[in-house]
Length: 214
Ligand SMILES: CC(C)(COP(=O)(O)OP(=O)(O)OC[C@H]1O[C@@H](n2cnc3c(N)ncnc32)[C@H](O)[C@@H]1OP(=O)(O)O)[C@@H](O)C(=O)NCCC(=O)NCCS
Image 1: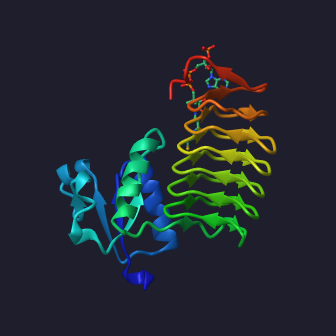
Image 2: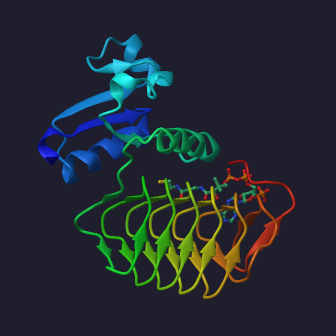
């Protein structure tokens, strides 16, 4: 069945190409199409206008959203448009990642190589977990987050939807971080954050008054 899967990439810039690389490794699609205006302009076979992804002629595709991490709200909107229409939005786990059988991955979650997704973790739809990330036991990650390479969440961390976490950030146990957080690379997150859209950097951690230039 997988050999005949038709993969449809929504956005085919840098992120879309990375996702396609994983899709080719893991799911080996029989056919690929692209929703990307610049590929249409370049005359690439299989390219369609960006906004055409909901057309009925593509209903048999498996969809992968390749928007960059700076566009979580747009990604979430597209994801829900697809799911509301009953489209297939598979999750994707690289074979070198360890995902405990008790972990729950929702539609469209992407797990890059060498990640560890520990027991009782839940990851909501559309979240991307980049290379070599550890999500420890009983943690929950909201929709359409992006965790950069080498991030570590200790146990029972809750990360709100549409948050960005820069490379190598560390989270202590039992924290709750409100949605739309921007957490700079290398931040050591030591306490919970209740305000949505907070920008955090450094060790010791600082909450910035002015949002990071993200
Ligand atoms: C969030 C991020 C983009 C912000 O970086 P930025 O654009 O330089 O941020 P700003 O220009 O708004 O910086 C504001 C201030 O915070 C400092 N700062 C920014 N990020 C910092 C960090 N992670 N740690 C410590 N200080 C940081 C800047 O040096 C600057 O200080 P100044 O005002 O004294 O000059 C960056 O920290 C980050 O995480 N980048 C992502 C890297 C990554 O993980 N990529 C992986 C993608 S696969």
